[in-house]
Length: 230
Length: 222
Image 1 (spheres, rainbow over the protein chains, first blue to last red):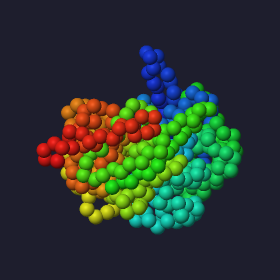
Image 2 (image 1 turned 90 degrees about the vertical axis):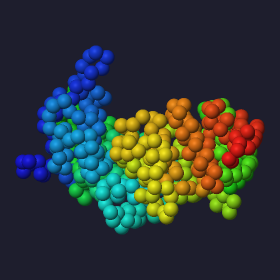
Image 3 (image 1 turned 30 degrees about the vertical axis):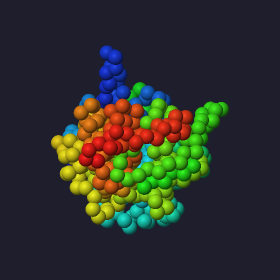
Image 4 (image 1 turned 180 degrees about the vertical axis):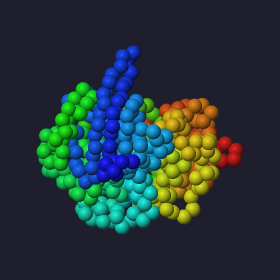
């Protein structure tokens, strides 16, 4: 590992990914180099088909590159076994999806979500952190409620608490503001910035200019490569 | 026992109002396998989801004999097998079955190894949900619901992903749980499941149109 690797939550080098669809080849990623430092909030932007989702899937360890290196929290994700990628997901990654409901399990209460998060992260003593998170997010009196008993905003806050428990080294968000009103968008972006302040590398794939405006950096993709990094 | 009283639920579908449940009242008793039957859209899933607490009723109540709303019961009192199997992708089969005990530890219950063996998924213990079939995932969800030996077990089409032989296996496990003195209420449109029931509730247009004891309920050994 080089010194620059240690300073990165994510370090991608020469990442290629090609899909085979109906006999034709689609080059989704055509040589991506990207470093994401801990404590930064990155907006990943670009038109549909530019490679954002593919890059997010690779960073999420649910897919592997055809070529190249993806170092996440010091581990080479591209060469890990399926079980190794799972361990990395549990220990180091958090996820947020577009719909508040998609971030939650309908059969778990708020408190059970946080207990599950503690177990996935391998934290034996997560109760204190769970109580603190519940209080900070104004969910203490909702702790024993199921998702369907919560408002959309409350569901979103539980999703944030679940994803940020630990905290993870890297939080991946796919269009996290796509279904939210203005107030809720601000709350999510505040939470992302607070997580970055706590040392998490936050990456949000987005079409929403509000996300890009508040991010520390914007990575713009086009045709499977990074077109601009500002 | 579950006491269901005057349960009604209506949905808006476009400009239309659909009555999913229409003033349903009945008791579900322990010690017998009760099957809610009826065509798609008859109200089976809505009934079970309200009893299990995953959906709300517009009016009416569903409580235990001592007056506790069933929708507020924890895993040690009520286990639910949803129609769409919802396992946690990052947990192994063993960890998914053990989830209730990991999140809300309770004394008693059935050991995970015993459940895996009875459900014929012990060889899959270390696999992830993505590495097993739909039927195996469903049996994992059944194991999860049974982990803390709840007094009430609700299953929405709990044999829907099983092949013929495994339907009988799952039915045997559900009947065994019922005959141990628990409430077991499941839905099904499978004739083999319905004929194995002790009691069949037939729903149509949100109402219970028939409530029958079956021959299975008077079979020797029951």
